[in-house]
Length: 284
Image 1 (cartoon, rainbow, N blue to C red):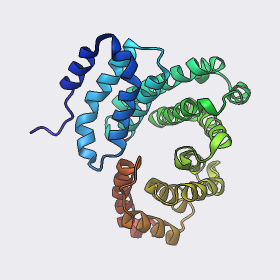
Image 2 (cartoon, rainbow, N blue to C red):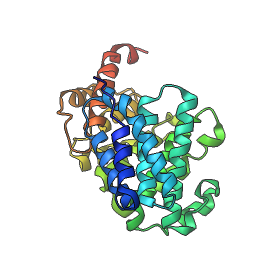
Image 3 (cartoon, rainbow, N blue to C red):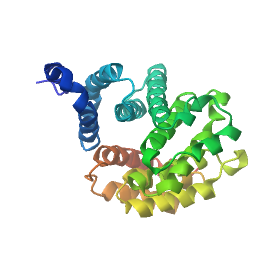
């Protein structure tokens, strides 16, 4: 029996609802996303998620001004492109779609944010200041999808130069509610500030503060924080004791946490690989 998630029954179900379909699309998209993030079999998601990418894309075509649906679509494309797509060109296309969906959602909710990706940094701060707590989901989704887009265009310095814009958006999330999604905005701020060593303009000390806060808010249950803290900060400053401690904790933790199971399982795989490479890395 195929392990992929069946698309045809879902499409038949949607078609059978007729005019009622628009009433449940948001809930359906959220349920799909929930089922994915709580799955402990990454290969099942790799095989089955493309069907739902097509499904949500079709739903968005039918309801192009449904902000919750656009956000769900952006999250799904971001997750799949970041984790499961090895082809760089394909991942870049998916990252572009994820960012487009997120920007459209934010534009629907905050009119001043329309055209966000094309404005200058000086214009960004006052614009972001207008985004309030009720729009935090669209703001956060926009920041993460933009970060993925930058990652997929990391050979383009014009794209890399947009990192401060993503940082500003994430900092606004922290200001509005630093505990949103278990403190994940702190995690991504830690990553962005630790991408480069200090000699090249990186700010690992600031990054560490964000990693520590993310660990505190998530109560250590988000194993991706341990892994990124080790990979982005401990390796940058050559702190092997911290590096190995963080990775060992991630490996020995229970990955089954609501909303984090898939991420945790993947984080444990990365932790094992990094720990196995520890001797070679810290001898350099």
